Length: 320
Image 1 (cartoon, rainbow, N blue to C red):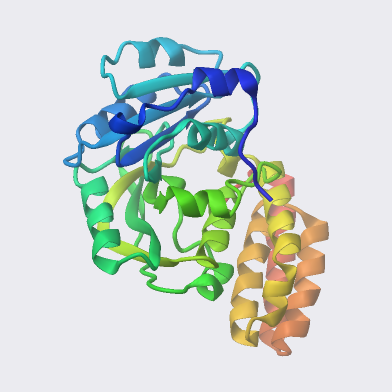
Image 2 (image 1 turned 45 degrees about the vertical axis):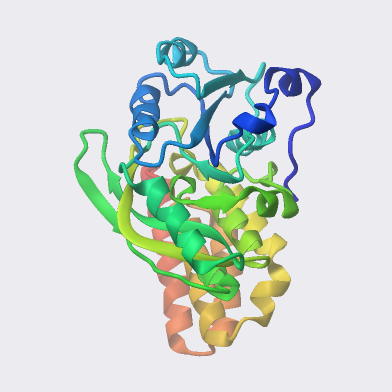
């Protein structure tokens, strides 16, 4: 289970704002060696139509000019916290939440940006739906390092959606969500033992305690950069570890899913393990899919995944 960092030095550096000055939204931006992108990221927050926010940047022991880039932005709502050693994205986000003082938490990755009405529309959505709704997310566009569109995510979920989220990460990136702070604390924050799937894991756990709503508009620009060695999706070991832990962590949930949903969920894991070139995981999961589907299609999926894993290992071109 995730937990919030309990570090006296960080707690002292991250003293919350006085009660009278507390903002509606705290924007938490974790960053590691993203000095080249963080200014544009912060500027997209400062350009929001909803201006009742604070920004908490957590520098996860960067070795580049991240500190200088943040210091160059003069806005009293911007706060900077630095880890003395690299702890990973989940720990950086937990540090940011601990330091935050807003009623809502909005996460933003340091190489992503928001459209101007992103916060306004999400807070309005939650207000219209009422207290049963504690999370709002948006659609997003994936772009390459040159700004060209390469993908779109436009899945729409509403209400109690934990079973749907077990099948796939339909909410997607951290940069798309706004969550009521008390609910984030209730589920224990982010799981710092996960090296990938941190956003998916958090969405599932939140979906057990609150309803979700979607703002059906492309309000996040998400950077796809396979050459970025710090990006989790470019690291096969992190992908394998995170997906293994998800299967273990939610084993009981997957066991109770209807057969068709379970088969779809397992196929998603199979695709990731095949893309990462992990033969043991592909074999184990392939056997499970055959047993779940009980048809020739399950066997075919497993054989194709083995072939794909073999190709990835031979070419050493991992990722998905």
